[in-house]
Length: 117
Image (cartoon, rainbow, N blue to C red):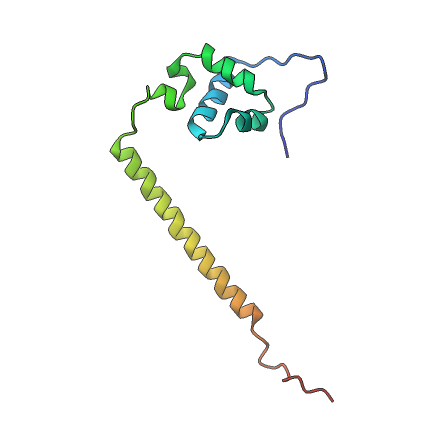
């Protein structure tokens, strides 16, 4: 499941600036802890913290790139609308699954009422 290639012991891996920037941006914007993101990427927490220090706030992305400013109202409204659409879609899927389960769990109309010969 993990697509990160494992390095042989004693081999140092090198990461380019783009990877570092994306890793830090992912961490800062996801709301996940450094430990979780590091584990997902096959890194150590310390690397993420070191890369965050090295990268300028604009290059790091996420909350640091926004300078701590709150998102615009339009951005929040668009996010809310998207979440509502997804919730509506999930509710429709749930209702379809409930109906399907009800149909499948009904006894067959041709079935006997427990009478055996």
